[in-house]
Image (cartoon, rainbow, N blue to C red; front, side, top):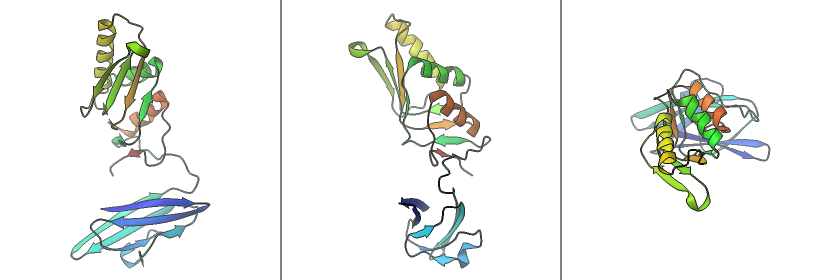
Amino acid sequence: MIRHQIHVVADKRRIELSVCPSADIHYTLNGSNPKEGARYEAPFEIGAEAYRLLVFAKAGEAAKNTEFSIPASGDKRVQIDDRKPARLIDSKRVNLDNTEKVFAVINGFRDRGNTLLKGVRIQIGEGENTVQIRFHERQVTAQMIEETVNTLRKVLNDDQAQISIDIVGGIQFGDGYAAKEFAELSGLQLKPGDVIQEA
């Protein structure tokens, strides 16, 4: 497993590479074969432009090539491919903090059974009368959330009860387009690295 981290110190950027289990690492930044590239000894500085970092790691008979795309400094845009399946990382917490946001997401995703939310906590009501439901590891759809909300409102005999939802275990999307749409409806600010798309 080859990993890379970008450290920003003042106006300089450093790349740190790590591999598990430990191995010899070589790399290039210009798209050429990393096998013939520089040997990685310690974190190295890069400029402000975008880079294609190619890494080659070898331990005994095992060898692995990996490619990382490093955005230009100051490029905060998130690159999402509309067609590929996408996943919001587990550590990115989503808070739908009012009823309008909750229903915007429900209405936008009610018919998309392939959008799965994990670590969902639904809160209904306010103050002392708040009721909470948690779906810990169970993945739920927007339709399941809607049915839960409607049932709770009925049980509490308050069809206008305030609703907020926290999602703390990541979200699986059928495609990147859905991930962008979800971010828009929920007011979620996406940063590079928040959404993972397998090649």
